[in-house]
Image (cartoon, rainbow over all chains, first blue to last red; front, side, top):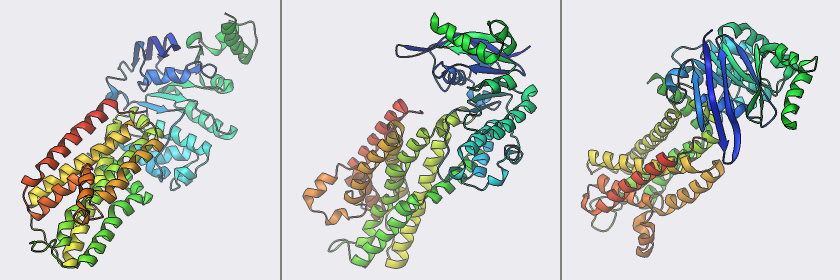
Length: 239
Length: 247
């Protein structure tokens, strides 16, 4: 299988604080990989180092065989990103934000269809400021999908969404899963179980586990994913 | 080019919805023109002058919107887009965040040009003024003043730690220049001691250049202004490029 995302010996510190320690992993074509870990485990920093929005101290990153800092223009035609925190211009309407995002790419998806899938079509003339938190979150997923990306980065995908909206987002992602490679971070184990082919558990900047959800359970003394996950995290603390 | 067109159209719409630049860069210069015009009517700039007071003021009023866009509009929008992580979002698209900043420069340039034309229209139609300088000379001076004032904005917006700081610095630069550089309160009616003090403001130098070129009074007297604006631009753009914070 083709590896789409390749991270080799990635390290990053803020001053004396080591946030990522020698992290290496690959994500293969068509795979959905979940990055898990406690708050402050380094999930977002890892994603941002991969994307080149954060500088890292050492290591190598390749997406689609390209260097994100050197081949930016070429690479980001094919990559979609949803950041954990993102903002928008004052006085902008939903449709205007979509049109602006669409204009940045050579080829793009029909944003009206995407808005419809995420329950935002009737809001297209609404000011983004007037949307609820969950609606803004869904809008940013639409923006990440607007380029029909081959690779998708989703940071805290459904944080702030209600159960129904989460299910809608999940079912959409399942529909594009096979033709899109996805790296996502999440706090929700049910979401990870539902969507991810493989998980990476990040603990204090190191990869504590790399494998499927089933492997994760098998390698622990427990029966459920929740218990097994906690066991991995706590194991790290005892050391 | 198509991308720039779309970005310009959207961002200009957002800017107009915000109203503040419409007021500070378009309406205020018109009001100032009308007030000065009504006060001085067709009076000469000084006894024996070959041009009227309002004609002399054209170069000064033309600087109001450049100042509003460069020193107020630009730093605020750059700091705001950084704080809202809009610049960061552009970093993960094929288009560099520099393009969105360049779009803003174009928008403030457009405000300035519209204001320039309106000011000219009011002076010629309402107060029968005319333009006696060199059009090319005026255009070059105008571009230099614009480049210099925008350099301040790009620098302040680029290095201010957040929107609030950018707002404070902008106000500290904008209001003194609006009132004391001669843009609104005519430089000629200030006492000499005050003129010496306000000469340190970059816009005062810019206005001297604009006046000299619009009145055709020669470049010799304003060489210092010209050099100081070139140096200021170089300094500000260098600092901006070196220390710009994208996040």
